[in-house]
Length: 327
Image (cartoon, rainbow, N blue to C red; front, top):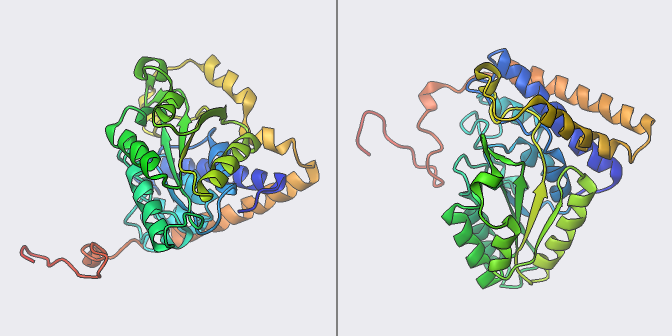
């Protein structure tokens, strides 16, 4: 993927503005049910996906818009998906927490905490088998939060990946909170210790710096592609917005304003912007606004799915479930 300073800024800025636009559409009622904003964590998606090839695989989380965009998904189709429109990535059936695009190696976001690790390991193992066992062709990336590191299925996936040297990169986005529970109150030991326990390299990086994430991801991806098995990267980050937009009305209090303000001193958008010229930044910003203006117009003007097709696309074979009971 593109990995120059300008490319990293473009991806980071695109994710930030996409999320801000999406929050606006939630407040207007265009996106029903709310979203989990990725604002503040953009450096991770941008940095990791810049280290990947188009044929590589990612799986995502309930806070997954940034990963999907960084892997190359069309912002207009993504926004239409959030709005539940038939022109969305998944015809309006996936919504915010289940977006996928197999043609880009995006094997789906997942609303179940920690569940995507096993999917990534299985997909990467299958790709290696298909390639004749060489392991050089496809790398899988599993994104997950600090709230997932005590989930059994994720630990089982790490064990199997290490045992079979599956080409996988486990990326923990440690934003300090599992919803409202602090990582200090939830995680015994260390997050990198989980990887070390399975004999895989594990490192902690500044998850607010796109370049730092890219450097760590590139090393881990190269290792996996060479057939040397999985790695774990813990990215220390911070989400500036709510766990879910529901908080905008509920006003849940679990962190104070000073903490959020302090975290904004290390804004990933500004960190990466400092690495390009002001002129280049202005050009990128303007282009992104045009892209997102078009994406919003596309999403709000697109039709909702026809209820008559509610039972379509349930099976990979194309078989359609019968309505009215029975099969």
